[in-house]
Image (cartoon, rainbow, N blue to C red; front, side, top):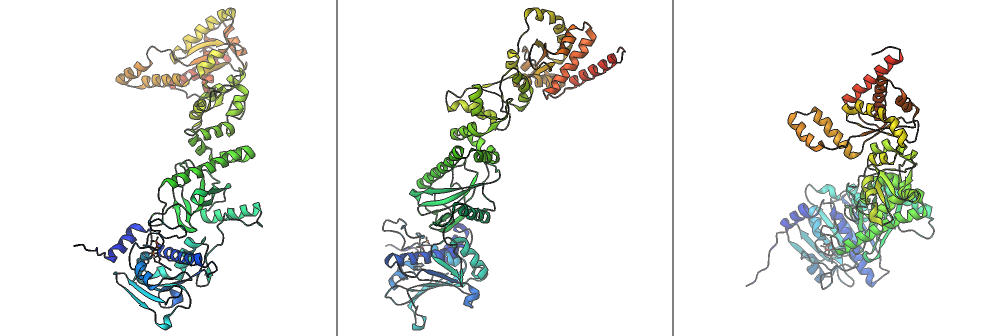
Length: 596
Ligand SMILES: Nc1ncnc2c1ncn2[C@@H]1O[C@H](COP(=O)(O)OP(=O)(O)OP(=O)(O)O)[C@@H](O)[C@H]1O
């Protein structure tokens, strides 16, 4: 023997209010939606039928109830029994259960949301050539249905829904709440909605334009809209269209930098009814720099109608919208590179973060982002065109150290020391064989400095040996080379790996025995000492070489060493500071004619 479930409506209402809908305010949306659907259904057979929705809040009805009137199809007695008495029964799905295209609703639970704020729902409805029916549903699951008394007869076809407030929820039915909620959800609806006499529709969706409106006026209007909705005046406005999803809309480009990892919320309308102001994952993750307002006819809502259902169509939409934004960026590069550069000045960190994984973005950075180079600011593309190989330093310190000396040797070098730059430059090769890159290290540069001819090399040997003895305690290797600029007496060269060894040695000097021997095992047997390269072309160095005064030469070597450290923005260790003091005081004493 089979039985039918009995469902306690109070349990269902509780479920809806706590777990389906975010707030009781959705009841206004559900009522407007049913009214729009009813008018749409009536107009399908009678295009000239009146279409108006009127909401009377509790102040206007005078008895604490709220009333919504529409001029829609209305329901016959049989339909009322079928549709209003069964939860989950909807007139808006086809035989296979698919949502019918022309309607907003589909689940058959919308009306239930009224029980979030009401104890009693009264529906007076009249279909064509039918008497007015009066249905009253109670929150405990009972309902009554009768033919309306003659004085309750509706004047025309349509439906009036009256809500009798639930104790404690009366405020949801008051004018200020109703106007705000109706305007929030219904502002873009294609059918006029009035709260009392106040029209809450804004007319056309903001991206629609008429033949009379100039491009400038449209832009000014959209700017004002973005200001009102998102609180910013956009850097640019991008039109969006994905016909397969019946989607139209606009993306507003943020005028200020944002963290690419921050939440990106968009405003989504479904058949011109607001779904949510807070839809995430509408765009690919990398599109952090825009906020969108869209309307779609085909994407599916979840049952709460507060989020989009994740399906293949949403994936497709995400991809198409991503393509539109990429297209905007590349077009901007083609037609208005100055604006693209202005965009990059605002959003470069985000674009670079993407470019670490996305070739298209990498091309954009390559072509449009000016890097600091020792030949002035240049994009990587310009750099390649002029110098072929993109030679770069992976840290700002190395760039500072090498830039001017490299320039004097006609070696162009890019500072890739800022966030993401080294990763991006290293990845350029992924774009094709013509993208050749190379790290310029301090030791590379040393090998590019011109060695002395054999006679000169022989002549400087005593100086070099003395300098080496002087600097041995400081862990520095001494070289003598001839290079430009001649005004630079000495160059301190330290690359990343050598820097690590230097740090380890400094640690070793300070650590206890155990640590010292562990750190020592990393540095043992390696000659990766930093180099101090004296410039044979520098007059002061020449003088030091020829001085023949061992003490003076030592003092000069120490002094030039510390000066080279300072020029290379290197930190001074205690031993370096001691060398500086020794040299400075010694030279002063000598200058004043005394001995130390
Ligand atoms: N104002 C109205 N005019 C005519 N018919 C209505 C009206 N309101 C509700 N109905 C009928 O009652 C049925 C149930 O409405 P309900 O709001 O519960 O669900 P729905 O609109 O079908 O779907 P959803 O749960 O997605 O809102 C509707 O399918 C419709 O046939």
